[in-house]
Length: 234
Image (cartoon, rainbow, N blue to C red; front, side, top):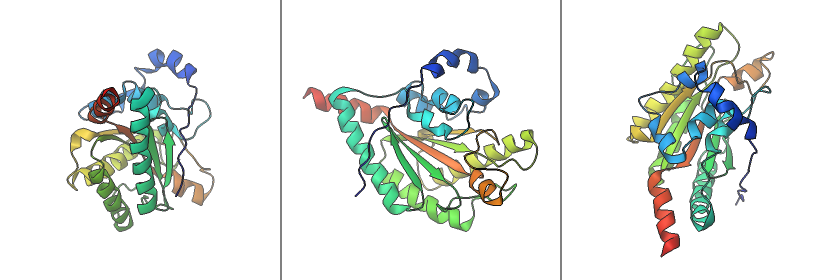
C-alpha cells in the first residue's frame, strides 16, 4: 500500500500575482456555469489552478488547484485520511494514472499511458478513455463529498487560438462523460489552457502525445469540511 505524504508548496508569488492575473485570458476560460463548486470548497482553488505553480517554467499547473484551501487541526487530519483513501482507490483502479496528494486535495494526470488520451486535433472520448473514465466515475460515486476540477491541454500542433478551443472541448468532453454517468454536475469545474502548459517535449511525437491530456484535481466539498469540524468538536 502506498503511503501518501502531503506536499506543501510555497506560492507567495501567486498571492502577489493573483490580482494582476484575475482578468487574464486563462481566468476567463473557466466554465462560469459550473465553477462555483470548487471555489465554494476551497476559496482560492480555481484561481490557484489557473495561476498554478508553473509561472515562467511550464509544467503541472493543476497542483495549484489544491493550494490555498488547507484545513488545519484535527479536521484537517480527518479530511486528509479520507483523501488518502480516495487517492489510493484511484491508483488501484487506474494503475497508469499519476496520482498525487497535495495539501487537502488529489491531482490526477491522464495521458496516453493512463488510458485517457486524444488524437491530434481530436476531443472525442474514445473507447480506451471511456474504460478508464468509467473506473474514475465509480470512485467519485463511492466518495461523493468531493468537488472536481477538469483541465484540458493540447500539444503545440496548430494555432494558439484553435488549441485553446480544442483544450476547452477536451475538458468539456471528459466532464460531460463523467456527469453522464450520474455524477452531479455541481461537483465539476471545467478549465482549459490550450498549448500553454506542456509537461513534455513538443518536439517529439511521444511528448506531443502526452501533452494532449486532461488533468483532474479533487478537493473536499463543504459537507466533508463541516462534518470534519463537527467531529473534532464532539
